[in-house]
Image (cartoon, rainbow over all chains, first blue to last red; front, top):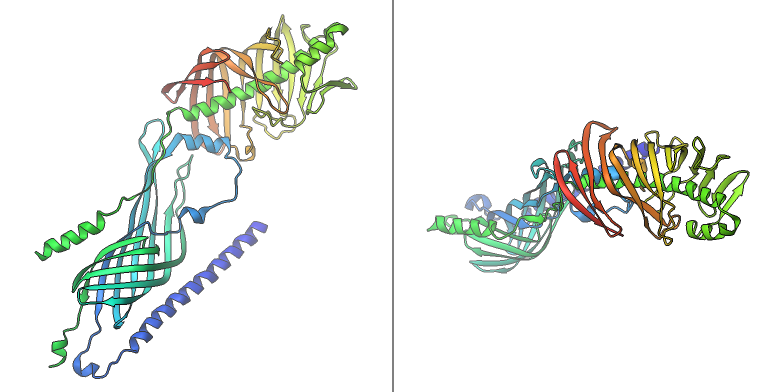
Length: 242
Length: 276
């Protein structure tokens, strides 16, 4: 009875948290729209004025996902049962591989120093489970995470070929995890969700339309070190003047 | 030219990182699970031999001339005193109670009982249990054990013992035992509530167990196999598909090291264990 109450309590809390995060994401998206609305659109319709936009593809190292060990810390220090030890020794875990954070981002320039957009990120982690007796693969455990992160990018150095910037992102993410259950190998997949946060201290892009970029001093769901390529759609100002 | 630039950018992006987040761990040997089970089984046999040995040592004390009683008590019961209340003997400071027959434990047909009223959290830990020791011949006994509190209804132990006295006066053990028989048990470790394995064992070639000194709160020695063979089957009450076979062959044993061979589901490896 107590455990049922606790479970209900946890579920309600999670729902409340989810709503809060969803509201934050919606607010951030609306804020992006409102900020975009602060641009001067004088003559917009006459001149077919389009804001500068860009699309980025990147790869991030060591993204934070919901199976990060720190989140799984347990104060339960009871020694494992002999049954658990027995099954643990029948198999062993291979290397844990990660795809890193594979991201696609789109943004628009709402001011000379400010870009607003959103990033969609996929992170996959997997490792093989081997039989101790035969060294053959008996199972695989994996987790797949997807993050949607509205982002604000502040460009504090703007040149035609080089830009330097910092950014902050807040959104929502979910992870589907397929664990390996020792003994039976019938671990059920489960889903976790939570916030997607990305803070970038220093980012640099080099290029005009087609550009290369890298971000360091970062932490979050996009990784601690990010590198990628992007393409800028720069409005043809000469055409506006016709 | 543009294609080359794009390709270089992509390659630079995706080749920059190592994608291994955590190195895997491979056990040194393929029969480690079998070793775990043999160690636990050996400890179960050791616990029963230890209980039988206490009864045999008490008999030594009871049948000794008055002039030797103190000497025997000092050697065989260091750290404890033996006290009797209404015919039941207790080692002071321990949950061990011995119920002697009115005949010596060396008299054929005599039946002695030993009760561990609580688990002994020693090395190795010993469960709460009732042991019956019946003399069947000259230095030969049959012992049968059950868990009187029904906390572990899969616990059975039935073995024939033959004993010979320990010569080394520095060892608190009374006898060296050669055993035959078998039993079954659900593991008793510190997390025994979560145990689901049922381990059955049968001594297929007589095993000789020698005492090894250890400094612990309740005991001064435990038993280790120096020779013999034992067949073990591992089942799981939660998973009927588990039916693992283990064969243990002790190749040689001494007070400093024991060499043995484990065959686990068809894989055979040699092991060596040194003294603690």
